[in-house]
Length: 312
Length: 312
Image 1 (cartoon, rainbow over the protein chains, first blue to last red):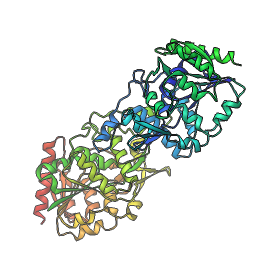
Image 2: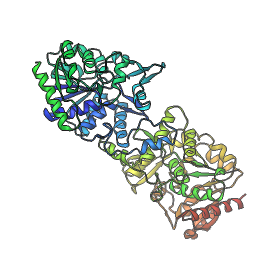
Image 3: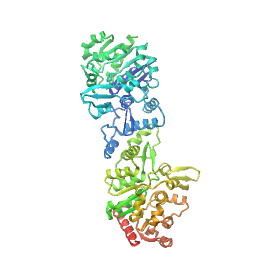
Image 4: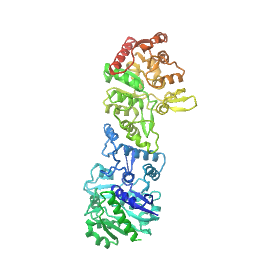
């Protein structure tokens, strides 16, 4: 039996590192957001898939949370002198991963198969499933009328605070990737990782059939709040939550998950939200959710599994 | 008025470095072999164009004669772990050049335009013309029946001594690149650089119209022997000359050029070939052709120009 985790990037990766410390890594299946995927410099970049892969391989740049530790940037720097915009700082070895993906996709392999090749090549024992093999770019609408690909919004423009809309339409029209619905249907439990609920978990839930599969699942579905003390630990979740009209709080996130999750792990610094979470119909569990090291990530995973087992 | 140089890789690049020291660089046009071009790792590699560009930009790895000085190899090393053969050791910054070329070609630019962009970006004042914009891969036939792309023969297999055939058929069916025939027709003089006569100069001469343009040119055409003391300075020219049934000697090379060149610069260590060169109808000039530094390359260029001017 497997634990299925719906995952975005940094927050999910840190949690998964903890999860594989408390359950056998080969019993973990991560369904990973591909809404941030995009071609940069002619290669298919899958930011969240690579963050999760590198983190589980123990090769991630821990300081940044993404990219490979000790990577160099000779390629992007050299591209700059030919006039290419190089705001997407893809490292040389990171580029090799994306280039391998691109060459394999061009040769006719599916993204799921290529993702599996990459995680095996890097020694990752858990299965990683792209949420979809169809392109499903997430777009962010700004107050001034601009519509940006999520990576333009985040990496190029530094996540400005003027979001009025998040467009998950492409995901809503895409097919779930190979194995995704089956993994959810056969899971011992499903965990919504402490990722951005709008642009990381949101696209996965937007895929046709995923919310239904979660609702129909006999297994417990537990979400972990990415909010600590009323604010996101990292990243622009606050701006994106406000942009879709949701509250920037643990209970605000719980409200987004109320139709699919049965349990909700929130941080002890958001204790005042516990009753509201319960009122939404979710069984709350209040713990320290900060994953500043591997041991803390493992404790959060343990607490999450405990809640899930209680809900069976 | 311009000096047009038909050029291969390392030998030509070293000569051109000398040539631009004795004539204004902007008066030099190099027509460069593209018979070695090939896609590696999804990018269009033009080995000879890049060697010439990097050398004239003062950025070549002088030790190897190709690639960029101080380049790193993180990308190819990282590709190896995904199972890619990485015998073609493309550096990270070198890859960026090839990636730029690939992205521009994919966007619809021609190889000549892209080559011009690259040489300008690297501060090269001389014009560099790809001999053709059509694919014209050179194949080498071996005794055991194998037919290898030139880079497989050279870079992968280390230029084995069992060549029975060199196939320039693709070049013979290709169109000369934009500006090539015009440059020859309007030149003050044409120089066949001290490159491999079989696989570097050979493909250029194989292009429809090039031999004719050289024969019809009112300007002097002078070739420089790549043979020093009866052997090539570097590379497998001996094996390739034998492979096409030519003699490995200055007079052997002169014989290949007798229908297009009027002058022939040979090394003083091959003095015994002088009379045979003259007997072939070529005006010989015997000098020290070894280009062990920039000053010697400039002296060879000066001697070549002197011969050309004498033949006007």
